[in-house]
Image 1: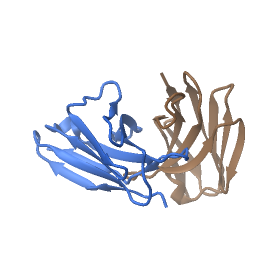
Image 2: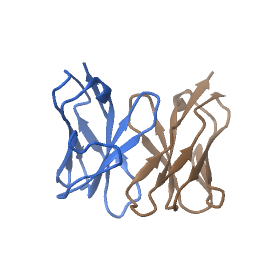
Image 3: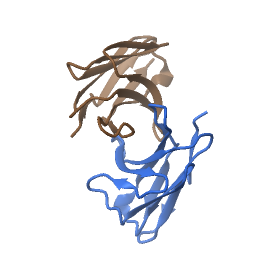
Length: 111
Length: 115
């Protein structure tokens, strides 16, 4: 099976940097995704990692270590609109189209 | 591009009735569509995988006779919640995938309330 762990909630200040961690135990590995979800809305794609290392995309970066079963999402220059839930998801190692989501981390950005 | 729509965006129904939710890929052909359920303050739980022209594959614990899925074309999948009960009240989200990409594109979700 797939087991994905994330912190439940985090708080950070506008303009700061925050790191949201995700650890996973899966029967195989075929890619890890980060999604942003505002309350009552569908998730939107942020990043995809399949190889070890850092992927940078503007204010958002995502890191992966396959040997440690670990990823993080780094958000820089936080803005109030970044207040949302951040979901870590891994792809099924056999069925490439199936995703399994972590419980999500609710990020509160305060002024 | 890659827009997925859902209809309705919210629905209230009485216990015992059935509700149909539509998921459409507007500007691409979706070889596979997925249905998720999300309870308040929880993450998305995959319910079933829907492939065009074939029977849906349900995740363990999801009743296929209660949650009927039809993927009639490459742009439309429907989820029918039959004999709805208050515990079926949830946020239902579909996503679509097309061959050649690694991403899933999510619809805006449908909030179902069963009274």
